[in-house]
Amino acid sequence: MGGLGIRCLSDLNKAYLMKQVWRMKHNPQLLVSKVYSAKWPFNLDIGRKVSFHGKVLSWGLRGLRRAENRIIEGCAWKIGNGRSVSAGGDKWVNGCVPIFSSNVTLAQARNWKVRDFINQGSGGWKEPLIRQSFSFDSVVAISAMENPNIEEHDFLFWASHPSGNLSIKSAYAFLQLSQGLGEPRHSTVKWKDFYKILWRIPSLPKWKFFLWRISYEGLAVKDQLSLRGIDISLSCEECGDPLESMDHLFRFSLYSMDGIKSTRIIFFMVTLWELWVARNNRVFRNEVMNVRSILDNISCSMELHVRVQSGNLVNLAFLHPPELTNSPPPGFHLASIGYAFSISRLHIGRGGSDFGSIDSATHAEALACSACLSWASARGFSNIVIFTDYFNLVSMLQGKSLQDIGLKWTIQQLVSKGASFHSCVIYKVDREIIAVAHQKAQLGLHLAISSSDVF
Image 1: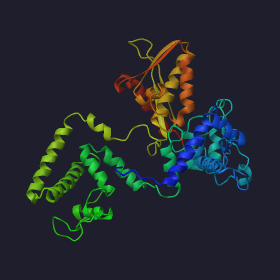
Image 2 (image 1 turned 45 degrees about the vertical axis):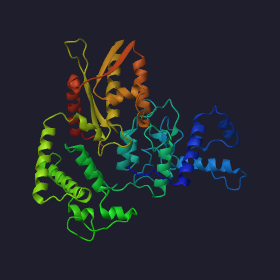
Image 3 (image 1 turned 180 degrees about the horizontal axis):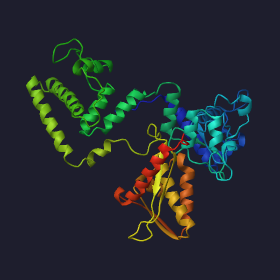
Image 4 (image 1 turned 30 degrees about the horizontal axis):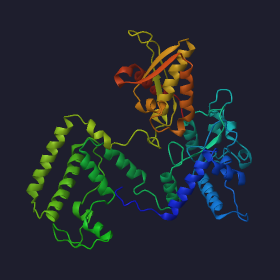
């Protein structure tokens, strides 16, 4: 963030070639695609890398074949009927190969296909067989996936993008990560938890952004400027220390056990902010601030924080992480859904709830809407209106937001069920309007927690 955008030309060229191959594979009507596939069928059809050593190929075709092999490295399988995917040799569980249980021998697992774990009648997973065959972590991940669609064929998708489509940006990032050059800084669980807490703190955006820059050593203190090749004196302007670094400037600890809403965290952030402002005033404006002035500024900032807290904080929401992300919240596998029905404007009819392992909030909301449609269809209704408080689902059904490859079959099923009615409309409403459904979801969650069959 804030960089010059300088790329490795070698990896960038490879990313462009990967995008070209992806485009040819998904647009078979193109002349270049017909010429390419006539010379050599696409490896993406079988999902296996093919060696072309010893074959007579032009340099252009050789580069495209290498790009196709790189694409296969970054692809994963989307399960349809499960006939084409090896259960223990292909990446089909969240972009990874599942791990078998210790009691499964290689002779047993060698010929297993994913279809062996699919209930061909209902289209769901054979949960007892999955629990018996895979490790606990793999069982949890498989159960959180959407149910396969036995009427569709398995296909490869690009695992580095939520939509499953390859982009030049995601291909370049994949190439960098595969070489160990693009690993994000502070990617450990400890730092991720810190950032999650940081963006949820109800404080001014500039303070949160300031702390984020500190954690990435992004402030223009003198030791950082020197590392960037700027010829500057390294001594501290405040005390004359020979090296001005962030540790020297702030003497802080990044963690606190007080909780997100603690006033001590806010005071800590404000203190760092005012120390930074005082330092900049000294360097750039030649203004000398004593301790009393800094403390007064801290008091004024705390008063500003109180005034902000008493008002509407909607304008701060743009700094929060978006809801639609490639990865689910930590531990968000066990979830419950609830639904309620109104036959008339004055009477709330019967509803229901269910629970299970679900990978995302969008998945849970889509399953709740699907349960509503199944209930209405079984009772012979021809017109139905569904209220939901989840904007992403409505936007996804309208085709206005990013389509999640992990919910492809669930969204298709929801659209198919809706098309069977004479009239079916889904509205985004406030949470208060569907409070009864959320109450039923809470009952389902209590049932899930007390059940011994949930894994």
